[in-house]
Length: 405
Image (cartoon, rainbow, N blue to C red; front, side, top):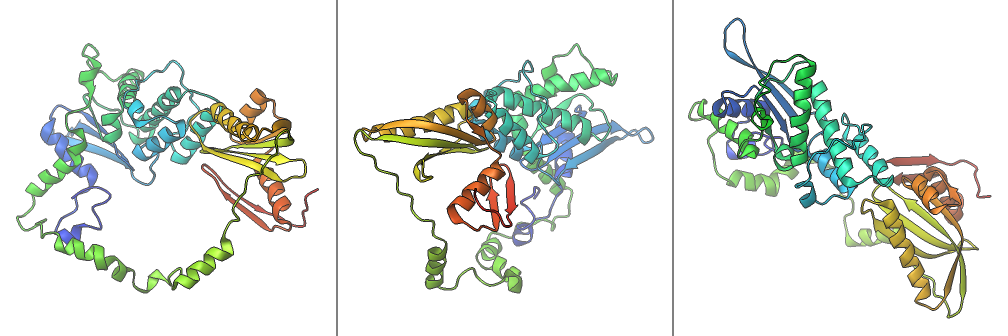
């Protein structure tokens, strides 16, 4: 067995572990004797293998490199960024690489930084196709400059792993950027051959690591890695994990249903009741809007500071469209009761605040931490600590002797 999920299962079914880079290397050597390099992007790691001839022995030597301490530039990062950019999986599977409008400040060395950069692009109204192409370019250039460890890829280059297999825009980015590095480094490659022959995706590319594990097993003695059935695994799933934790598991969160209800009662959030309006009433109110990284929130507040209505919407990739939809729903709720809405102020905060301030002419663009502080003190009085875990950042505020003006 190979892969990051193999470890806990091995001993319970009689398997032997094969390191992923070794498995992929063996599969490629067995199936593609003419391949000079391999780039595999997995769900949580990236691997680069460069085959060179040993000058002393004349044998083929594999120089391997693996990014396994961080998921940056792998399938996990791409999946999250697709969600942030509001691009459906089906659309991503048809997207082609276009370097005409790339945004080069997208980070690739850290998945969290990449997501933050992408949220900022989304909130600035950049199309999702441009964002994903920019991410692909950042990932490719990061791997070519860092994961190669100073070595130059050799033709032919095999692209493996889920992202390389299923995302055409990523494949095409490799095919564009790798030849550029070859030219920059003076590497002699057959530039008269089609790029699809020099940098390509093989059939069944997602199975190469598994196939390599098979080849590795064929070189082991017959008794090594013998399948012992599923009963041991079933027993481990049902009982073994709890026994393995032992005393380190700690006390349960609650022991009885009564404790559960007491906890719920102590921390229950009061149910919000939308305000009711009378026919002909003029509703004078202020709109507060938080354009967050993954969702947008809006409140309609009267002149006394009472919340009349509120709206919430998961981001669809365009902060202006999100805002228009929420504001329309607020207006419809007032008009449906034959009342008239008069907006006397508009405040914005969050990732999209700058865009909202410019396009909707907000009266105030307030920093999120200040907005949290003013709201919390207004609602609850003497607050000591505020903790906000957002979609893309975490904020902790410590307050001392502060009162709302």
